[in-house]
Length: 69
Image (cartoon, rainbow, N blue to C red; front, side, top):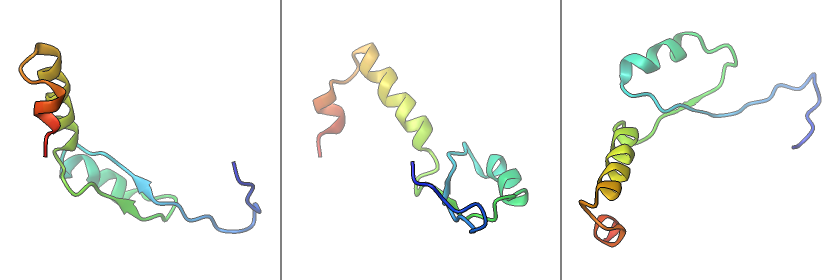
């Protein structure tokens, strides 16, 4: 971990993974760190990942089928 002078402002990008816009709003309103908030380009990424795992576990698809081009 890199040491930072305690008197110097530190800027970090927050990566949040909200399920929808309603869950992100409280973070935008209460930004105590004054940091930019990064959003995923696809807001359904969490749901999509869970679907991939469930379908692989159930044998619906193989990894090759699921992630082929």
